[in-house]
Image 1 (cartoon, rainbow, N blue to C red):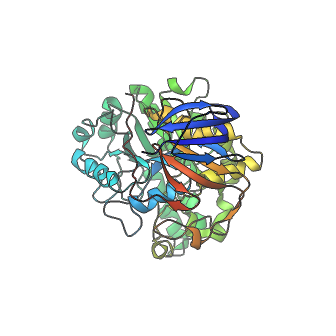
Image 2: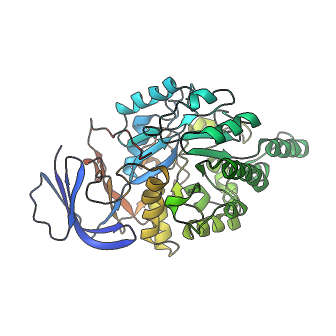
Length: 444
């Protein structure tokens, strides 16, 4: 493995921004300082560039195995790398669903041979696999995923006894998708009664409404408090849900944490008229007021992590009428630069972006020796040019599905280079072939 020295970078890390050098040897950050006089195989002149710890995306759907016509670990991990995401945690609603330890391990074996980024996979919970869930190794698996609301893959867990069993006995973090299924079905029936087959994407946030989210999130938080479960509530999409979370204690001590996603921070229900199914996600993108309160909760630490819920479908699938079009879309390639656009607009600091996209996921999941620019830590790093503009188009997309909800959007920043576990795997639009990320391990 080649040694690397990054010279004169503007380093953003742990609440500080400063000019410095970083020396990497054998995959590890060996020294951080100013004007380091060290020989290295590769010298990167980073003057005028910002150096961040690599982002850790705690919620992606890379669709392998079983759904590889939409995406696969090879293509989507490369898109993530090009977007400054060096580690991902992937969801169990592939085909077959990762509901046994063997099926879970099969996914790790695929990633070992194909993922450009570091990786971990959630163990899936169903209504009847509690004993398999309890075998999950806390050291080598990021968490247990519970769909408390059906979404792509239909892994709905709605058995009250099963939920009690998971929350009371889970050996590691439980991550939840929270939407109340009964409320959604009642809303959908009402809209079908009124509009027949003429349902449109504009109705999505009224069918999968704020009340449905709050009912389910409240249930999850209540169960976690009852059993002292380590709970992480994914993709908060409403203002009212932010009231469920605490910002009075340090993240390291929180037992209940939460996540916001790029699409809920960027879009609102006003965008359905133009973008339609292309921004159809579960939970739904809701009002401007919801969007603004989610960002406020990120800034005041009620919400702990920013992620993507990257969930690609084909153009053909998303082009179907609203009722048939699946929910989800691709985001990993542009998540970081979207947040940097908010920085340019004065909505968030660079330090807070790094905290929410690198430090906090590492703390939240107790990731071992990643998420920070620290001596002795793995070198997961991203160099960004805050003044290099890019306009998203099909020509520069790396997703297998070949579309993005950001098509036509101009961003003022670009990812220049990405280092994963000490390997320079992406530089100026070119990937280093045959180099793969590592399996994440956890301090538990």
